[in-house]
Image 1 (tube, rainbow, N blue to C red):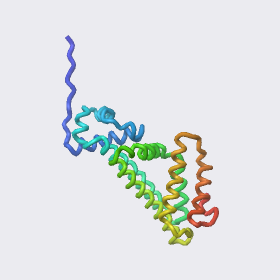
Image 2 (cartoon, rainbow, N blue to C red; image 1 turned 45 degrees about the vertical axis):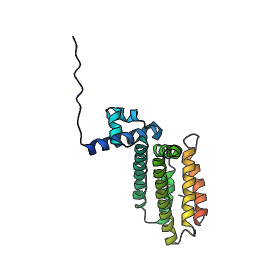
Image 3 (tube, helix red, strand yellow; image 1 turned 90 degrees about the vertical axis):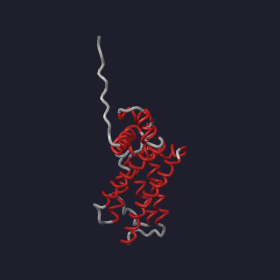
Image 4 (cartoon, rainbow, N blue to C red; image 1 turned 60 degrees about the vertical axis):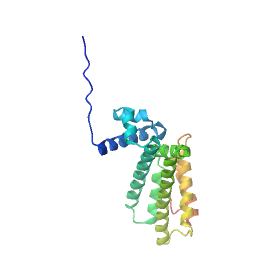
Length: 207
């Protein structure tokens, strides 16, 4: 008669288990988007029963919001670190636009697009999306103000221009998920529009 050895269960400290759950959920979101985050999917990734996930998370809505926030905060941190490598404000804006349209951040674009859609029925996520949109707008505003201080950007309305640039960047990246978008052409068009909005010399943001 054959027998199957019982699976060894590993008891972990609450903080460790909670972090493990968030890490697993984050990996799923990176691979397949926020819509792939289900109780079952996270439990299978961690290797535990679904009930244990519910024990460590108040709700799946809260877990989705946490994952979204972690991913976007990491993105913003990466971009801020990249901008610190440039001391020239025009070069910094040029680098910012090029980086955001180079097509290498599709996994985060999916997170953004799904975040907007899912937030309609997830208030925790809606709060997170609003907070991170404001954080992105602030990043752009800081880059604009740096150019104003240097005298190369002449706009008087940093706040609105930052939102406009953010809208154009988001729109181009979102469309690139479903249609062919030539990165070089999109970047050229965005740079021309940005120069007008920023009050920069024509061609200032071109390579």
